[in-house]
Image 1 (cartoon, rainbow, N blue to C red):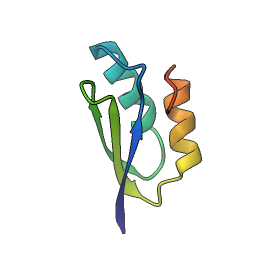
Image 2: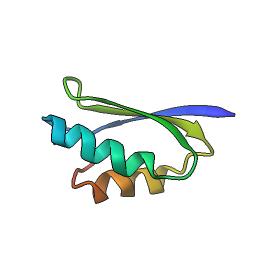
Image 3: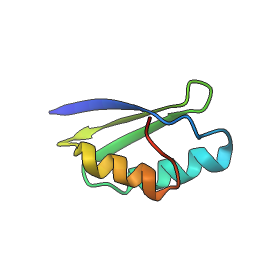
Image 4: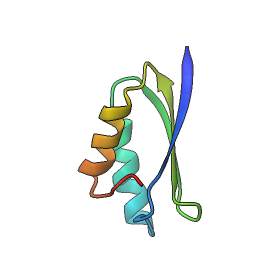
Length: 67
């Protein structure tokens, strides 16, 4: 069953931020889509059997902190 989770990531501000977060999160097993909204500072992740801790770690690995 597909699900979507949203994270607030206030440190994102540019295209590099978008690409870094998108690349890291896309590599997480189960993720089918990543939408990074720089204006709203949100990362929406869609997929199956998403693991919150792993997704937060991927955002952290990209160099950003989930608020």
